[in-house]
Each structure stands twice: as C-alpha cells, then as structure tokens.
Image 1 (cartoon, rainbow, N blue to C red):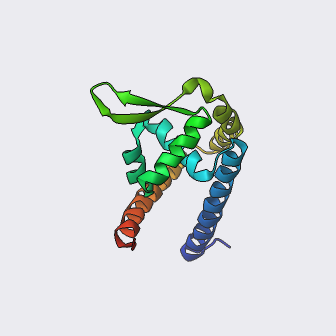
Image 2: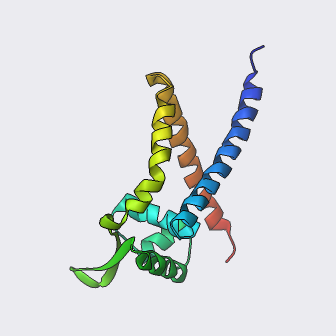
Length: 156
C-alpha cells in the first residue's frame, strides 16, 4: 500500500530531525578532531564561505557577542586556521582571513563526506536532484527566517 501524503509528511519530519541531529553530531566530531569546539568550527565555515570577515560580522551572523567572537578568533588563530589582517583603507578595521595553506586538515576530514555525498547524488536523476536542491534551499530560507524571528523575541 502506498503511503498517504500525511504519512510521508510525518516521515519527512522525523527524517529531517534525525538528519539535523546527525549533522550536529558530525560537526561536533569534526571540531573535536581538529582540536576546536563546534562554535569555532562553524565560525571557520563562515569565514571560509566569505573569504574574510570582521568580528562584528561574525557576531551578527551567529548571534554571539563580540567578546565571544574574539575568543573564537583567538582560538582559530592559535590553531593556525586564520590570520588577522588590517584593512589598508581603514586601519581600525581588522579582518579574519583563512590561512589556506593550513587548511589541509579540514579538507582531509571532509573528503570522505564529499565522496559519500557525490556517490549518493549519483543515485538520483536530474529532476530528482533539482527537487532535492529546491527542498534544501527552501529549508534554509525557512530556518533563516525563524532564526531572525527568535532573535527578535529573545530576552537578553
């Protein structure tokens, strides 16, 4: 018997919860492997995605205080993953930039995941991949909106 729409939605909700938990646990294991905590690791991910960021930008994106972000950047710098660089146009501005030559450990730990995901993607046709991508993009959009809503209503 084919599952109902309601059954599929319930299964998707449960599978999404499990995926979220496994993702957090994977990133915690990655962080520990790299000698970091999960917050440092995910801040490093943001730095890598942007190329260079200020402490203020990281604080805004993560919802952490600038003091907490300074500690994150200190740990990432000590680990050799980033360096701080002053903006030549405004010496008051300091950027955190990846030290690409020191990122081999990060690339190494993610290589098996990348390979496994490419193998998984190969099991789907073009239309299915487009549907999966659409689901992920819309899920991210929903999460960004909910994060913003929670931050507006969170008491300090």
